[in-house]
Image 1 (cartoon, helix red, strand yellow):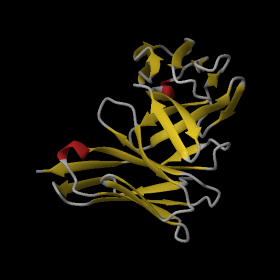
Image 2 (cartoon, rainbow over the protein chains, first blue to last red; image 1 turned 90 degrees about the horizontal axis):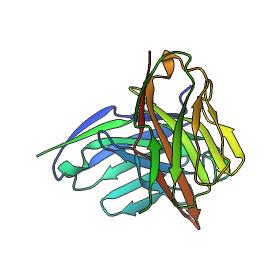
Image 3 (tube, each protein chain N blue to C red; image 1 turned 90 degrees about the vertical axis):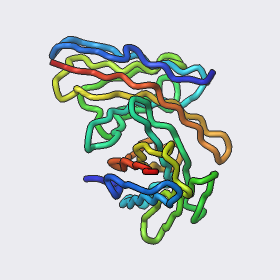
Length: 113
Length: 114
């Protein structure tokens, strides 16, 4: 049973456009929602994370939008650049102290000139 | 430089031959974890550790063992590897400071079990 569903599987966006990746979760006990960026041949890197007490978090060109009632959260990449081309994973976890981290299946993002 | 190191980076072995993948972090993080990454399945957590001598199962612990005798090290042990454990493995460590969490992943270990 997949507890975190991620879509789309792959995404092509023109340079300068907005990339949007969506995730939905089932477990209402999840309390921490990170996004990871992974380049080919590298380990994942924590990109940005949100807790459900806020509906949005922004760091530079990256924004997480969180909808607690719908049990959905999404990553928005503004002004997408070719260097953003990577695989992105969403994840969810209980509060720190409950460390079981569940990942989505990933989105391969390609930014074209 | 803050880092998580894994060894070996690549390993080919045969079914049933015990192996250990080492993981070490130099950031004094309390929390460490192991993941495997498979095409189409994303990352799945194998085991995690909240501190020395404290470990717990993730989503896919079968066939794996871990130990946390020191804060910096968190080895992954495959007592009797099988072909379905062929995968890319990542170790990670984390620190929570106030509301901010910092997490670092190692470079990965690619394992092939014949």
